[in-house]
Image (tube, rainbow, N blue to C red; front, top):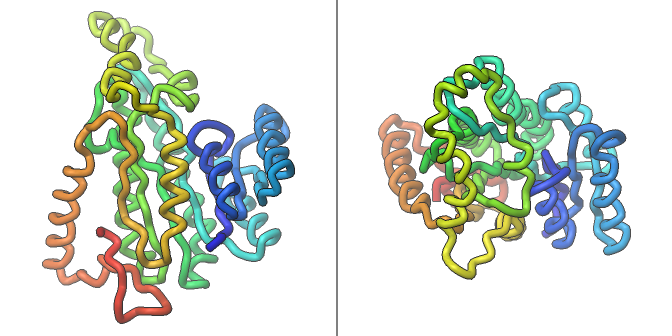
Amino acid sequence: MSSVVLITGAATGIGNLTARALAAAGHTVYASMRDVRGRNAARAEELLALGRREGHDLRVVELDVQSEASAEAAVATVLDEAGRLDTVVHNAGHLYVGYVEAFTPEDIQRLLDINVLGIQRVNRAALPHLRSRRSGTLVYVGSTTSVVVPPFLGPYVASKSAADALAQVTAYEVGQLGIETTVVMPGPFTQGTEHFPNADRANDDERTRAYAALDPLVARNEQATEGLFPPGVDAHPRAVAEEIVRVLALPAGTRPFRTVVDFSRAGVEEVNEVLRRAQEDFVTRLGFGELLHVRTAPAPEAPQGFLD
């Protein structure tokens, strides 16, 4: 079933690939990005041209996740043009690489503003409409780093862990209003995105120099990551886009709460299963077991567990 989808951070990488894949699957896609008429004008036009050429309903909308007004305006545009919004794909994010001590509090505050508060701004813009319809899906592009915690990405890992927790607790609440949640957890990718090339470094150069003995480890980070991939495997982020297409094609009420796309064989699925059982047991013993199920409008008597 086709739906109206808003994707954040769709100028490049996973967001861009997901916009293309969902549009090809027949969805009405709003690929959002910052500065549509400026630095991202060429990327916006490329997506629009693809839609025209292939006959896909692929549109572009301005959205800066660091601005509440921008998030509200983007959602308003979708509702005005399409008449509804079914799915939000939270993909916008930024990467920091370096030594934790060398990142100033302002550095980390900026990253949290993009990777965590950006999600909250977009959810607050979109959820009133989804709540009014008692349906919809929130898809979060998370990260396996929140489980395996790689070195030299401290602020990024902290932001993805915070975003994951926010998604989980939000899911308890919105699930009672018929809104499903899926957290897609990509593993590392060294091609197909601008994540590493566009990554920021710590601003405190003096503190960075204090860790100079570790510089060779940081320098071979991407090479070390590539060494985790099995020989002959095409570890490309298009696999994440394909997984999002698969999840949204599932019938309402059957979408998984978590799904992992990881070519590094980090064992995240096993950890997720242990955490799922512990979380389910804890919430049930609290007496809040009903929060573990999405309350779907057509069949409230047989809800689907979002932790499945």
